[in-house]
Image (cartoon, rainbow, N blue to C red):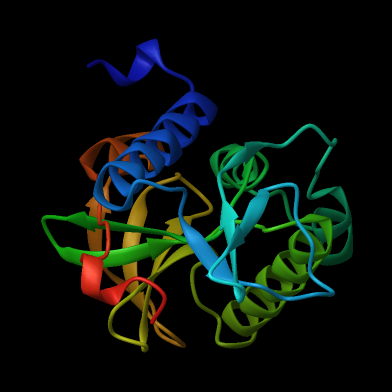
Length: 193
């Protein structure tokens, strides 16, 4: 599969659908997440075992932008990170690559998108204060101290220890990185834990 044949939006959507299909094959129902009464999402598709919501990724229909972040910080964010975070509303998606396991982060709803923007602002301000290369995180790893981030200058993908410079390059582009991923579906005994 050539990356140029697919937009980043399509790759993100396709990965979310691969995850959804893998989950449904294993559990015979949609993925679940704990219900939170004051945190509704269009992703929610019903109730499972009284305390969980069934959910699925939903394409973002709103006009989500990072204009306020760019204006506040006087910085232009890389187009790939903006496309990534404005493609789907979704719970995090677990994935694996040759380097290990990770969870792709997404916004659950519009309020969560605003919270995500605040976290990105905090990350950028920290990078600026430390006089480090500007990166934007989009995934977490099983090691709480390490994140997966995009280099805002060239769009390359890196492993980064929080508060430190990126130290291991994973891909030249976000699209290339997503193509390396495999959905990581929890084992049956882990569902709901």
